[in-house]
Length: 142
Picture 1 (cartoon, rainbow, N blue to C red):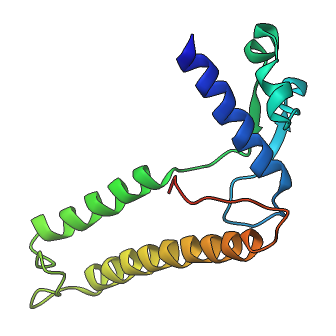
Picture 2 (spheres, helix red, strand yellow):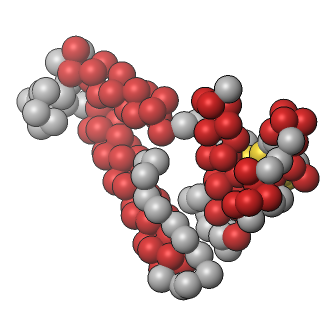
């Protein structure tokens, strides 16, 4: 139906963008794609048979952890410190905090800042790549 056709069109567009991008360590890499995905011509894509749509696929590099899962992990670790009374909810170290608590708090902040830096690096890369007329990158899915 229409939803399937829209999904196929979106997947073809995603494959097209990922296949043209130079490699960046913080952007998922396209490992393989179906032959049915290789048509970037709009008329050819519209005329594609249902068999071609059924056989459309993309193989992306394996992510060990998606950002929402990482965020939940950080939140759980932070809440554990708060509930133990080792860190106040406003992220100040409680009086008498032990070295391991301070170390855990510092590790959480390093991880969060590192993820922000990695995201900024990927966006800066896409922005630079997008400035080239041969690449069309739209930031809509972060």
